[in-house]
Length: 423
Image 1: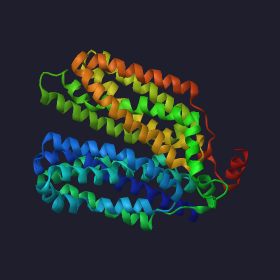
Image 2 (image 1 turned 45 degrees about the vertical axis):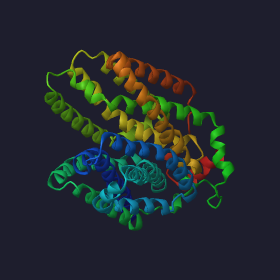
Image 3 (image 1 turned 30 degrees about the horizontal axis):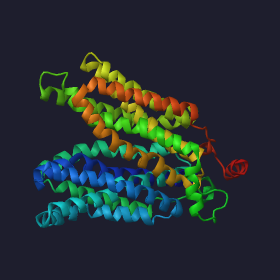
Image 4 (image 1 turned 90 degrees about the horizontal axis):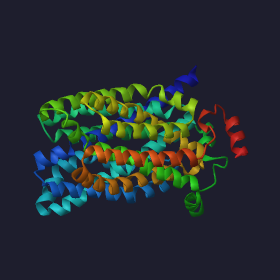
């Protein structure tokens, strides 16, 4: 009984860590544009530089953070550095942003883009791979801990809006407070059961990562298939959503009516995503992480093509709500699949490169292409093209993506050693 209580306490430490980190994420991405416009009075081009630098710097941070995370494994040096940097968001936006802006708008754009990319675009893969590794060692489901992030998104939307109306800079102090909580959790609450360390560190815990080990990833066909899948399915999921609200409003007589229905639809999607996170780990354990990824790809295709062919906004809402199923499918499946199909010691590097890094490149390429197609051929025809690309790449993944062993379902250290020996 005492062991169950101990593991339960460990679980909640990681779930709360996900909550505190994604609270920072949700407020920043939800309100940065509004704050820049209403408080800092920056131009659209200056704001664009900030977001471009956030995306561009992520292409530098993510692979570096992936390699460093694999070397650190359960050491929290990088995690705590990111958490402490997040504590500085309040002081930065309250006291430093405007003085830097008065010196040079370009300077503040560069500093802000690099600063936020370090915490968010780079940091997200660090915390997610750490929690996934902890789930293997502590024997809880990553998807259940990740629910903390979904809850953070809901609460941030409710709290931050009211804070912004009361005092716009208060949203940044809320992120600092959440980062303080994250730092304390990392220092005192996120404990690892090292009796099961072999599930994460391999059979030789003392063997250090080498450059040759890291470079070996690029020789694996399965790595490139997974990267292609992410570039085609997951990235186009985001590209499709970028201007979706503009397309959605075309089904209504007024913008206000479309915006209102859109907000209700988004809230319902978030609620559905949160609810489905509960059974999703068990579903993926049953059908397999690889199959979960393939189903996600075909669902994404269905949602994009279905939206293009929808005769009314009611059908659009139906296809939009599929996103509430897609995100739990993707988040749980990708974490389980990497741990099953690749060398567990290279987990963070594979995750950073095959998913986040590849996705950022694809979003960068397809965002501008999709924007041009919207103007040239309209939303419906563009969506049909995007849906066709997703279908083709998902079909390739369904044929060539390899199956992995079910490491996450192992219950004892003896079983782990047996599987490792077989590998």
